[in-house]
Length: 225
Ligand SMILES: N[C@@H](CCC(=O)N[C@@H](CS)C(=O)NCC(=O)O)C(=O)O
Image (cartoon, rainbow, N blue to C red; front, side, top):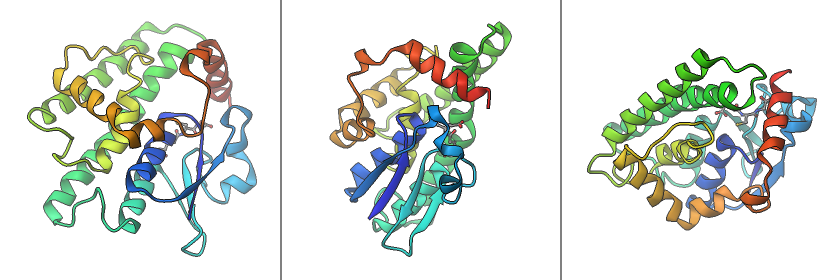
């Protein structure tokens, strides 16, 4: 059984989507990041970085894994290689796109959110820098998706890593309607039951009930720590 330490954020959703698509049984452990639970000693013993997501594999001597990219690789291994090809060249391609998300899309879009949504001052040059870089990375993805249903043809952990971020492009203030392949891929992913279920972990009220001002306040509070 996998214990999933998570919160309703894109990095958390990468893992709940993967667990759903891999059909692995898991138990959700909600970490209240607004209240700083991720910095408490018991969580740091699982994840030294003090950030969600993290997992504990109770069937493997309570082995703990942190960093969403590493968790996706671990889950792909224990689920019998599902969503990570065995062929070494194909496998390398998936890992390249996974790293592209981990080192590019995630951090850049994360900073776009910080400066566009949460930062107390409106620093237009910082907003432009991170939104433009996110758009550039999206354009790379759009080119890769030309003629492909998923990032590496078949559905893989690269899609699980990337989708939850592109899915919130509006929140980051980055338009994708001109990126036709990327837009079609987002819709394709949204339609999958595993993605729908994964996005609803941890369970939360209807999106319309989530007050954007509360999200901003909670994020701004975290930035001060
Ligand atoms: N590189 C990490 C990033 C994790 C991360 O930034 N998690 C955020 C939520 S999406 C978090 O826990 N934030 C709480 C904080 O900053 O204290 C990963 O991919 O797992």
